[in-house]
Image 1 (tube, each protein chain N blue to C red):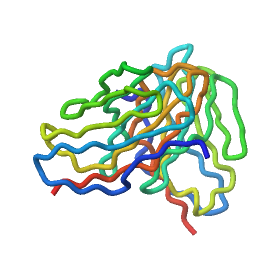
Image 2 (cartoon, rainbow over the protein chains, first blue to last red):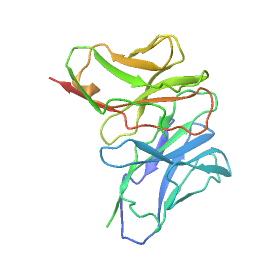
Image 3 (cartoon, chains in turn yellow, red):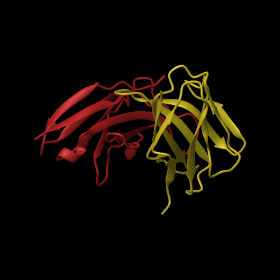
Image 4 (tube, each protein chain N blue to C red):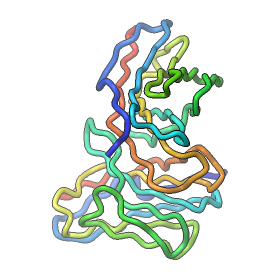
Length: 112
Length: 111
């Protein structure tokens, strides 16, 4: 089945540790996105990538880093510089001639 | 910042039509209106989109005002499974640049 996978679904880390969230898609989409969602809030854009080896900051990029070495993969690293990393993280992709943005199931990160 | 404003929450009785409004007064001529919904703890799901004509699919109808400054998503016969957060966004179709979501409307379907 084509789609977007995020792993793991739940992730726990100690404060001060970097953590990397996985996002993989087999839809052959060029663009990929990372959003953060806090309880009762909407989605806020962290980073996005329109093509391999290129990415742009979204509205809340501070404390996060990404890479786009392969078309299928867009991992997000939550660094120790992110002050409030506990949140629900959503990855999405979009085909160049498509209208529908596809979302993964999300990863819920809890920093203890 | 999001270019849309939506009421934070709405209630609708089961079996009735749910009408969710969205204001997008600064929409550009080449921007479409898109609607997504997010069921609790899942990723958002695409519902429908349109430019200026009304649109209908198996999930919903989209009514866009003539001046394109607002729109309404209509769920014709709401069920309990339609309880979700509904997001209205505007963007240029067939482009893969920055896509911004607002806070959406939390729709409660009442039995």
